[in-house]
Image (cartoon, rainbow, N blue to C red; front, top):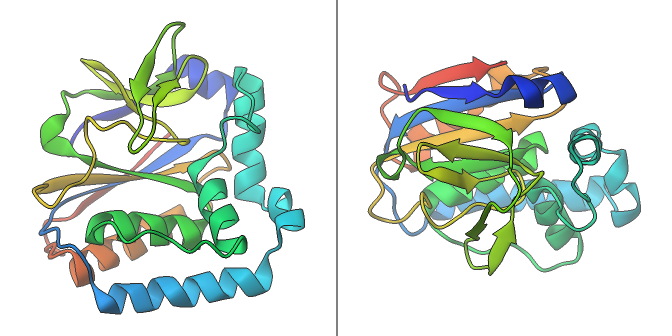
Length: 222
């Protein structure tokens, strides 16, 4: 498995931070109708359970917002990706269909209510460190302009930052050509239920992205 570490400075500020990592060799396809049945079911469930007014009462979202504040980033300006997904659903905007791995990523995020990132391992230069962004660091977000990642918790390899709980860069984005992928569940609220969530992610990759159950690797990083 690719090496993923949490920087001690970040861990000191956010002691409940833990990462759940799944690595797998996959066959990415454009769409899976069966997967979208699961996604639509979860969307309907969230629409019946959550309102925009109660969004900040969700422990996973509150933990991320509190972590951002502790680090020095405004969570109203730099929202966690899971908050952005749920907001989009509650506003009736639906989700984009990207490809099977990205769609799995979004389903895992909607189910766990954690921020989740997916990365093409072959475009990374390990080790991977989850750390606080330095002054002047930035990258082009997927489908977005340049994102200022200073004081943002982020993933970096030997070449620099490439992802965060808010928005990932184009460097390691999942495409139809991706073969080896890493999905990371980013929990600022501890590892409660994380092992089950890693198993669920594994099952989704096997069911909808051609992963072999015997070859999928998982790890919890504290």
